[in-house]
Image (cartoon, rainbow, N blue to C red):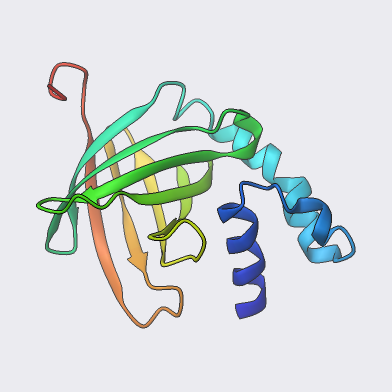
Length: 149
């Protein structure tokens, strides 16, 4: 199970650029082949870039999400914690209302995982470290163009 997480993490962090490397692995090839279908189903949620604000545990955050340049590859974005300037990178996919993303502080290694649902204007779920040792709930609200100012 842990190996599967790391394969999926690598594929997401590299933006599917490494997909041919895993072509020999049936599981990885299946995951890569299924990714465009899952991404296509979630495109309506991200038809336009989204700005969200809310809580990750006790921290106030602002998140920006959008489709990748090739929408079949899923979604990408960043988030910042209030009072900090570091942008944490996000990459993932969505299917129906389900959104799964991985984050990277340094742009190479996965530092956390997001699993939630975007229903209406609310994105909520659980953030966890890659080893699941720490988990935090999150609830974010999609800002309208008027409230984002």
